[in-house]
Length: 243
Ligand code: DC
Image (cartoon, rainbow, N blue to C red; front, side, top):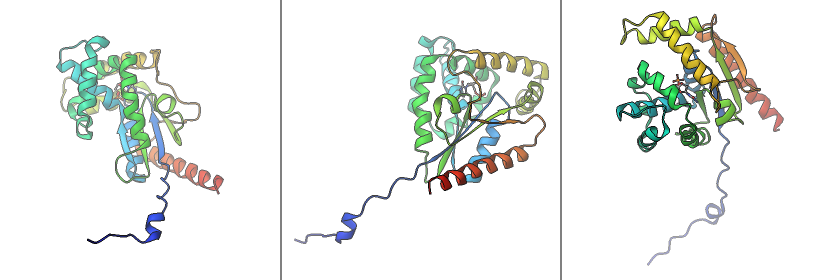
């Protein structure tokens, strides 16, 4: 019989200290450009990315498919369970989540406190333990800098005027909905904005320590360059303070 022994130094080795993951939040209203910005920041910095609006959309789509009323928690509960049990990054990227009726239903389920609570743990866990061997996570949504990750390292809040946002959303919808008009997109968007900003729980508003960008007249590249500069400056300052 052989007894396997390990060199003492290996046994005594302390586990490497876990590096704290950087968390960047990008909040703002629909079609403000926050999704594009968040995805690009994640790409540039090699961080994981989560579109939290897609979580609410997934619950809304599941509720609609079950014939449920998206504004009634009793009806929506089974949809939450289904989504949390089957959640994958592929599901969150599904084009079906972008349909106009899903946008409308998502805004309704997002106003239900039980839905927000059920999705909170998933979002926080993603921020603290992003998938893959990455240095951080970027999350975009409405309440990420205020409620989900109030201690995030860098927070952005993105706005654009309603007409510019409606133009962008119309462009996204045109392929599948060629008869959609700017007036209808704008009216639907303003209605949902009001619901998202006016709700009691986690309304859309900038955190006190968020950097604000208005993307009405700025190109996506200009906003991205500024955001990356802001994140890097913040990280360098934090490193210097810890020395
Ligand atoms: O960003 P989006 O349009 O995909 O979001 C879909 C809906 O979900 C929208 O009505 C706002 C809501 N939402 C929310 O309340 N909180 C988040 N963190 C993300 C989205």
